[in-house]
Image 1 (cartoon, rainbow, N blue to C red):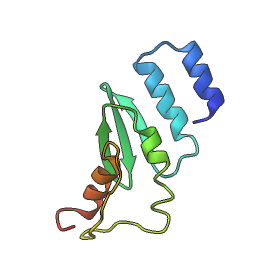
Image 2 (tube, rainbow, N blue to C red):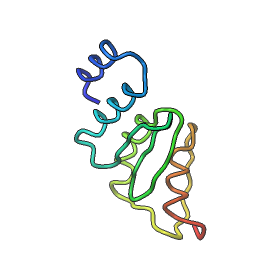
Image 3 (tube, helix red, strand yellow):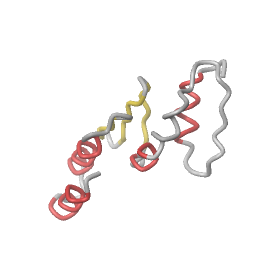
Length: 102
């Protein structure tokens, strides 16, 4: 997210659903890999036609994934391994991409 926008939001807007919605709008500027919004106390991420929901802000998880998928796009039935050590966001995304057969 643009640091200027982030700093303005932090200073001017109190913590609220509106602040989270504005942050999501700022994240989406120029981002072609995923779109994110905030509603019902939950972050909603649209990525590759999939809809994922998170209780915590997943922006930093998804913004760094683009290089991984630049050279490989998971397909139905593929076998993939997520050997990371975080919340499992990539594992959730990949499991939806490869489906029950993968």
